[in-house]
Length: 109
Image 1 (cartoon, helix red, strand yellow):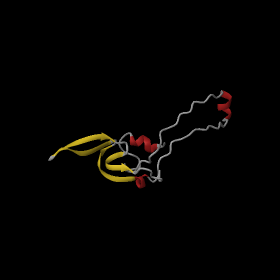
Image 2: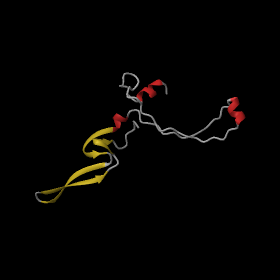
Image 3: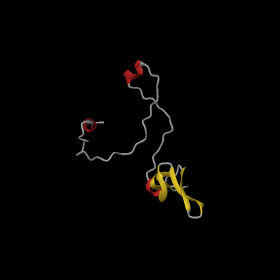
Image 4: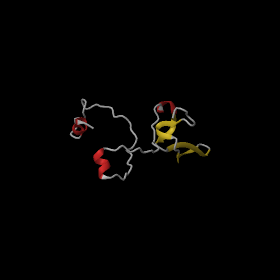
């Protein structure tokens, strides 16, 4: 919150316009039934839920792979006859960006 968010809507961006945004998980909405008396008195209600966590050391789980052409897209060359090759595009969820792939079985995440 704060005034930084207000100024960012006008293109000022808060701290000099170059603030690195912290990666966060999506907001969690939990509907609750409370009485007006509970609201007035400021009662505390305990809630349990399972939350999604972000991988802190995600760089350790990434490897270079030139076959990855974007998120979920892998491209490879396939020989169809001597001297003839075709480019085949296939789905691969491990590809996260051009040239980047998740390392399978990485324990950092």
